[in-house]
Length: 359
Image (cartoon, rainbow, N blue to C red; front, side):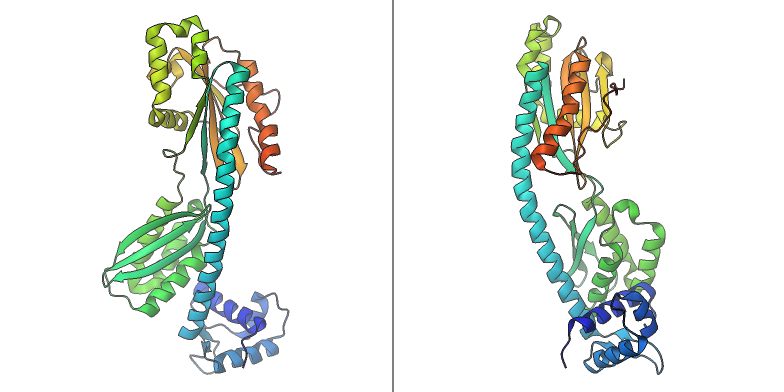
């Protein structure tokens, strides 16, 4: 007997429904659950075939069916194969996109420095609102599991989890199914306490594993702002302004531009109070987060390339900065970046023409 596409869809529906409810699944439920538009009688016949083939079992007479270990194995194998393919495609796409983005950001920072006659920096984008793509638990030893979490953008996090109870292969298989069924496609903000509680109940004696995996997921899909590349241009422009060009101030400013870690912290700090989508804000004199830039004005703006990719632009100049010109140049980036990346949803610095920077 052949396991055709229709039987696979029905088997998948049985497994997913059983994972959600913990109750045997009947034909009437499946008729509402799938997009096959089949009658309950037809589905019963297909379920009988699946039972004969060993993919599902009927725990009680006149009850619905539940997946067998063979059914779980088929489901997991196909899930892993599909997710591995997705990860490979995303990885290839991001390698190509990252190379292109690096060239573009280097060009953009040079153009901004030239057009404004100030020092300019751009922090490369990081992922925000990352969603979970795939979770794989593997047994390392009798008391340890390895959790591999793949998030949007091919971000991978490995986490060792210590076991408080022994776990066999079938229990591990069911934990993998539970985690992927419940968490795939979610951001950390969408994982709530009720969901975690239900998962822990279904995990039984291995409930502690669920808590450890959720903690690892939270760490894996948070944006990593400290390791983002920062591109700088126009630092020598500060010598064009007498109030910044004396030897002490110039030395302090150049030192600030050389410290990439401090710049990353400054950019992160200046964007905390700004709308993460499109805000433009100005820090004047003592408002600057960096001590070495207290004699300057810093105008920052967030850019959004879509799909959770967000970054920050900062322009540094004297207090008497031409703010109107700076804001206009930042707004023009929207058109430039949309054109370069060809993405209709790449909303970059999308503020209206009458917007002024916030102080």
